[in-house]
Structures are given as structure tokens and as C-alpha cells.
Image 1 (spheres, rainbow, N blue to C red):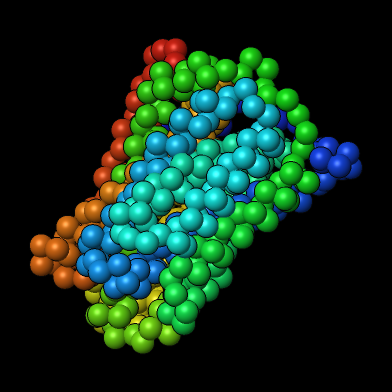
Image 2: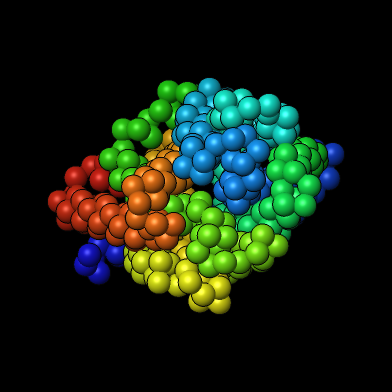
Length: 424
């Protein structure tokens, strides 16, 4: 990928005005930081349910009488719910005010996660995890649009990154705590914790998020216009394939720790927290770099992920080496922030759908990674084989990113219209 390709990908839309304090529900003035904090609590709830389900896999698999690869389909069901729900809910609610939509999305999220705690069988849990995933992508997409609307244009990656910190902190606190609950009490308590976090988010967003009508001219048809942009599809493909490597490894991390590394069940949450620390550090440092050089940063993260997941099978025999590698794998998760803002650039006036589809793409990765990793295990390649699967997926994502930038460079050189949509 040439330097000119990287330069062509820099944001071209004019800077947004610096944010003023938002008008909160009670008529007062809420700072941008307070609103983003409220959104981050929702991200914490979503991150806990998404990643904790992976860490609880050994417990609910045993309780429901299924093997680990079959239990992995529960994770895939949630991911497919995100894939379906993100575009569907965003398009249907295109004329709804953002704050109202966010509150309703969190209400559905809290309801279905609460019901997961009472699932009587594998089939019920599979269906309820699909329903739990429906609000995920739309919440993140609309929340990201709200976050960037409150800050200057030059800090939008950092605004999205701050919202995503709720998700990364979930991997440090929420996921290990849910895993501890699964070991000490019952895996069902983890879903109860998530449901309570969703209810808290509803109250905070309703209280702090800014008032305001839907965007002028908003409609389902305008949102569907994002699907006419080739760069939207290419950017989504980068996340859908390239991010699968992280999920391929993380899904079976608890099993690797128990079966290969020989860690006791009480030690598993500590290594899961190390992954969360890496994810959090990445989401603090990477958005700052991405606001200055977005596509070189994205390419670097994909190369980083390919290398770190390839090291996973080699490090699995030692808990200290594995913990270091898991930290570095988590660092690569900051790719989501960069692709989120790029989609806002290339989607023209359909930013809501594009922003939500980013999470459809990542949860397609969340379905693809565990599926391929599970197939590698089931075919006798060992518990650590998802590391090699993950490395291949990251390299495939890098190849798609290179194609996207090359197409963009050629269109920019010829002046062809529509090569790269500009953010509205």
C-alpha cells in the first residue's frame, strides 16, 4: 500500500464546530464528557455480555450437557443477532430522536439478557442470545454518532474511543467478575449482572443525553443509501474478516487456560482481565494516533494482530508468556474505533446505518472466528489451533484494506465520483 493511498484516506470533510454543553433531559446542561460516560456504561453492559459469554462457555456447556464447539454456537447466535439487528433497527428507527432510540435499545437489551438467566435449555439460550444481540449494533452506531457530534472533528476518534472504553473496561472488570460468578455461584448470575447494567444505562442516557429531533431529512430510504457506496462494503469487510482473529482466540481462551496451560479455575479471570487491560490501553492510545494517520494505524493494527495471534499457540504452555501475548492481542482490538469513523466518512448522508453496520461486521467476525476456531479444534488440531486461524484472518483483513485504499487512490487520481463518500 503506497503512501499516497494512506494520504488519500485522511478525513476530507470540514471540521465540525467545537461542542457546546448538551441540553439534558431535565433542562440543565450536561457536558460532552458526562454524555459520553453515560454511553460508555451501555458499552460496559454490552461488552460484559459479549465477552463474558465466551468466558462462561465451559460452565454453561457442562450445565446444559453440550460440548465446547456446540456451546460456541451460542456465541455465534448473539453475533448473528447483531448482524441482523444493527441494520434492521437503525433503518426502521431512522426518524426517531437519538436519545429516545438509545433508551429503547437498552430496554430491549436488558430484557433479553435478563431472560437468558432463566434459559431452561440449550435451545432456549440459543434463541435468547440471538434476541439479546439485536440492539447491540444499533446502540453502538447511534451512540457513536452522538459522541462525535459533541466534540471537534479532529477529536472524533478519541470521542468514539472514550465511549468504547466502557466495552474495554468490561473486559477488565465485568467479564472476570461474571466469570467468577459462574465459577462460585452459577453462570446465570452473569446475565443478571448485565441486565442490571442495561437498566442503569437507560436511566443515565434518559437523564444526560441531549434533547433534539431526528436529523433533517432522516428516513429509512436515506439510510439505505449507505449500501450504494463501495467503500462502505470494503470497510465492513475489513472488520468482518480481520477482526475474526481476535474472537477466534478469545472464545477458546478459557479452555486453553484450563486444558493446555493448566491454570486453576480461579486463575482464569486474572488472565481474562489482562486481555481487558490490553484492549483498554489500545483504545486510549490508538485513537490519538488514528486522528492523525487513520489508515496507516489500521494497517499496523492488522499486522500486529496477525503476529500476536500466531504467537498464541507457542505461548500457551506458560501462563506468563500467554498473559503477555493475550495483552498484546487485546491491544489490537482498537481497530474498531478507526473503522467506525472511516464508515462515517464514506457513507455520505447515511451515517446512522453505516455506523451500526460496523458492529454487524465485527459480530460477523464474532461468529466467523469461533466457528473456524471450533472447526480447527474439532478436526484434531488442538486447543491452540485458533491462534493460527486468527493470524490468517487478520492477514486477510489487511489484504482487503489494501484493496480498499488502492481503489480509493485510483478513483482519486481519475476524479471519479463516489469513490469515497464524504461525511455529511
